[in-house]
Image 1 (cartoon, helix red, strand yellow):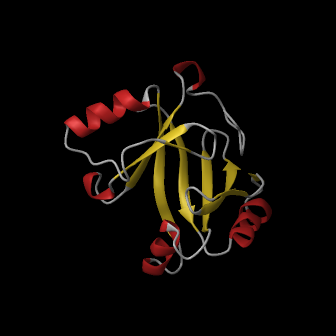
Image 2: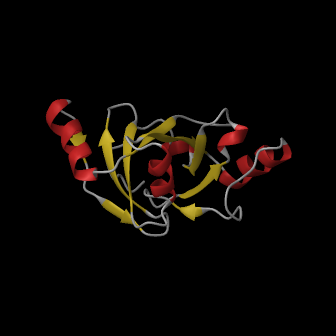
Image 3: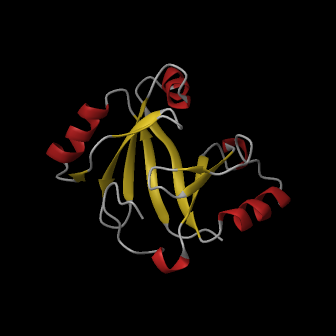
Length: 149
């Protein structure tokens, strides 16, 4: 059901500082900050060549990432994002198997302008999972930071 790993998201307290580390110390191509108020975060994507790293900074005190950072003061891995060809079909299979979808189960648009859903971390060994709908003909192609695909 899942396709390629789209990105690994890392929660950070200082988005500009974290982005500079990836750019200056690791030589990575770093995208521009993108505020996503509907998700309560500002993100920056880093191109790794075969996937992406998404840096997440809370956008306000009510952000889910602010709660994550309260529990993990130095930041850390927040979630894994996998591509799926049909988000609704994937959701149906997952819920039939006992997995819980966070929120009301309605997909939201993610940072790439594609529908996304999040799966409860307690159902996946303590790891928050994001599913992003990417049509099959686009899966596996090399993406660039802030790629609108």
